[in-house]
Length: 172
Image (cartoon, rainbow, N blue to C red):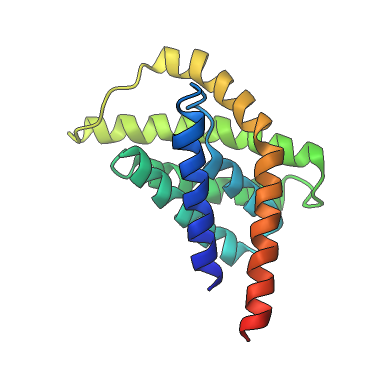
């Protein structure tokens, strides 16, 4: 039941991203990435790993990037998991939360570009990404937007986690 609730929650984030943010020209915000990074900080490893897969699959299906988002997001998850558990103090606070989102956005952009480039080299039919514009224009905007939406997504994460716990408690 818990995973079904999270699938619905990620679907809601994707609807908000595509239905509200896209028409407002805020398409560089990546709400599934933000909730994944929040889950990385606050959830157990096993659940965060499944959340990464749900976010990546939903993002890939919504964007039609032919596996690029899944591969980039899963690599990001393991890199950030290593960093959060071995380099950064695991005690969550605002600085660590915002630094994780900013750093995760930078790493995701780099991984997405690298995977996209590799798929193109292997002959996959993927639309081209302008590397210079991608990193000099899109990346700073994506960092700012992801940081702006971090707190609302964090509140959404807490609400979904609370609902999940409540339903799990009543279901047993």
